[in-house]
Length: 402
Image (cartoon, rainbow, N blue to C red; front, side):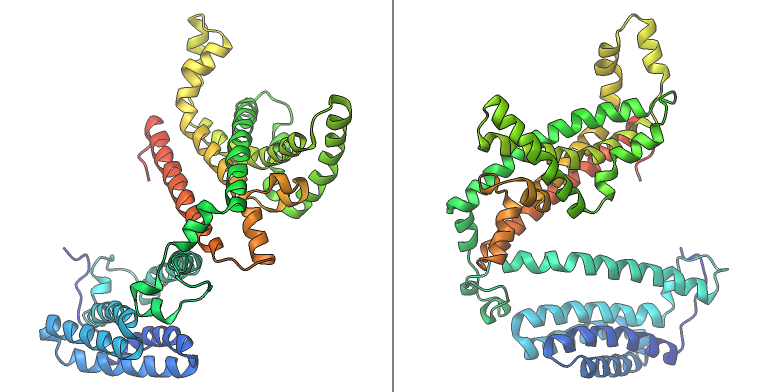
């Protein structure tokens, strides 16, 4: 049921609103065709004209929307083939819906009746701004994914790809990643360094978070600020400091303990990545401890349980989602980090991001696109796990998951 009685909007208001939307769409199409200004003008004029005609047939909304969809699809197909035709279908569906959504004032149907026009504008404008930011952030990823299947050694869409020709797509770059010795060595190094750094980060970060959650700890705010400083300080500064610090430690380990340079190099990279991951663990575990019931640990102590038993039997199961979330963030940080390993590591510790950086700087290898796609898939899987753990943590603390 509509919250607000609605009356149809005027044709002039609807046409001007859809003209703005058409100008934005025309900007995108015109930019791809090499003339953004002409695209804006044509897009605005076209949508205003389509809106004026469509609103003359309000009572036949469904057929009109199908006509608009068909027209946009046909125009897209004539301009750029099958792929442009698919984009035309999406544009046609959206504008067919948008014209009547504005024209029939359906945008006010679910809003409370006392909102002013300015408040209604902000209500939807805020969502448009958030959507634009989301598109701005996600578009580079959406571009990389199909490019990784390019059959040619190019970083751009070929005519065959734009025509959706199967000959334009291939798995050659993925095969190169799984068969090339340099890529596999760097991938193996990342799989060695990231888990070890994660274990160290989770252990130290969890203990630090539990200690700093105690109200009687003196200077805990200052200590917290120092511990999370690697997240705040520019990475290049941290990398420079780690270079000088770990170079001295490396000399001590090599000269006094007789350790090999390769082993010492791995130790330095692992410790450096652990330092970068600890702040994430501290923050997530501290957030979990906010809703922790301290009476549970006191009850366990009254029953004769020692501190270690209390931690593993009572406290750890309740804060485990936060610990795992922090560990996942620490793993992602280590797996994707390139600046610090350039300063601290050597060629034997070349990680996957370092190999990607080398591929961009020394040889333009499209295999980078395949690796980037794999990393995106891994990141999505890990972040999905983090979200599921966050919801589980909220349920354990009696909070309705948001």
